[in-house]
Length: 218
Image (cartoon, rainbow, N blue to C red; front, side):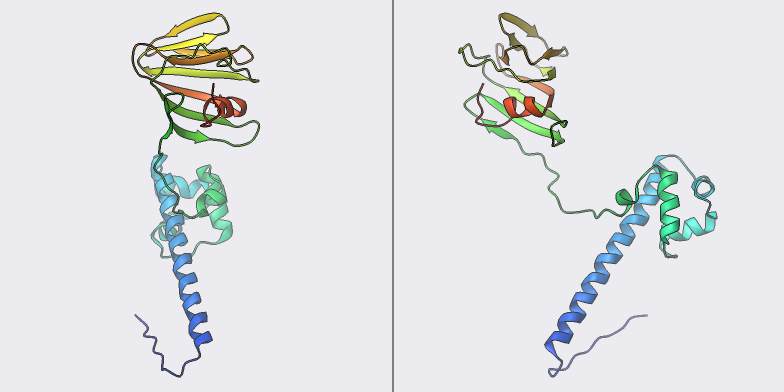
């Protein structure tokens, strides 16, 4: 069944605007509704559960759950809460909009230090951690002010090439496939040896500010 909406030139512009907003809101709600149903089905299948398995865990009949997944039944808040708990998800996770955020991780170039970095994951706040991939093209600087000190610990693993890690007076060579972890209260810096190298590193708040923010220098 379809409905045809017709307007004459004498229609009130405000009425047309309200109707346009109503239609847009309905479309947005439909999109979220479809997304929620797809997430329920996707999580269920990812856990290897049949309709019967999930239905038993959220105290619904398999036929009711099937109609919810396929869009033939409206989802009540009590049903959605039970389904979310059974799937180990929160209500926010189930109903969060898909969004249009940029999913491409673009590199940042720091020509002065000869580094290119990709921030793979970032948790803000004083207790947050950042996971980053860094491509090094220059050796570790021997300038007196190159080695930095900050609270916490740094961790890195070498994906390719060889990395030179300077820890105060120590020189540590880290080869491909090896990892290093050290207290960052020790003056430190790092760079490539005999050609480019790539590392994967996990840094706390202070480590991110020291090593990842372009222009901070080492």
